[in-house]
Image (cartoon, rainbow, N blue to C red; front, side, top):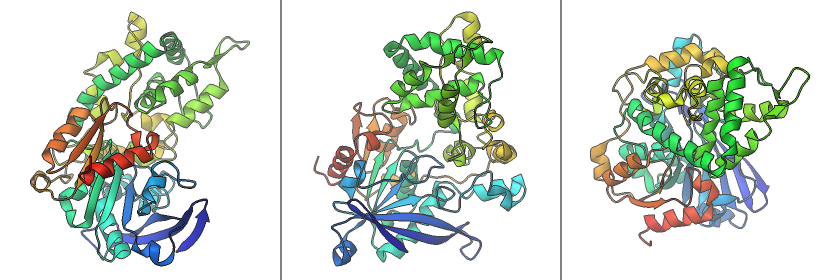
Length: 435
């Protein structure tokens, strides 16, 4: 272990060997990285007496956020917890899985078999091994953001004895919806976010149409070698689900073109910013495993977002431009073409196809066990969350015994980041029966 300091914090790096396949505990092992954080005033015996809180990041495919000092919700958490920021398997410093490392596994089929062990079920079993090592067997508190909340719900289904309290922010999954049903509910939400954006920034409607028309007539390459197709441009709509995303999108669009001797072209500065938003280089598992997080043995996901999009023709950019209909951005969806346009994903195309065709995924949630839950659970549910369907979340809240919800339109999906200490305070009060 390595211990070091930042302003207001003492940090300790932990590395935990865990089985790749928890059904074969004596088989291959991978490494999970976690960063422990305590307030700088908590040292020695005081530190040892603090209960643990483990944070599970959203995603899938993102390592835990790297804080500098007691920022956002962390400042509130370290007042009473030892916090463990866990890089879920395959992310951050936890045996990373990406286009560079996955060829070490062998063929695309072998890569797909390897990645089948990177869902919420394996993440929770990692947590249980780590908990027993760190706490001596005492239960701990889990804070799950978005996909981290999906993992926390699985945790309640399979290992509630390890949980003191569960706090979920924007991450109550449907217990039964198929991937098709998830996206069938998602596209209307994305349309509403578009309508709200263009009502706020009406000038963006024509700007977006002009960029889309340019992309239909020109092949545009991003600075990192990716292709900016019209579908890729539409996927900038993923910004519309975060607190300041509508403003970020507006600022991005307002300087898209520059004059050149050959006529207007998309500006280098614009393309550089677009690449930062669209590249999966830092989180490839988000694309490769995104639909697998919804799979529960009902058959293959089979590129659900792409297939269901056909039920919503208003998202067809070429048709909208030719007919004069509104241009619409899309949202949190992964499509086969991502594995053609993004250099970080191109080598993983066949692996992703095999995962999309996989039919034997295990169920993730035990509804009977959740109905008998005895762990204090509090969840922030955002009124019109673009990423996680509010109706699905509330159905799940009603299915988990004792779960208390805070339904709010004060924040978007990233409320735990935007609201910081106040969001964590509210959830802790709810879980403790104080509010």
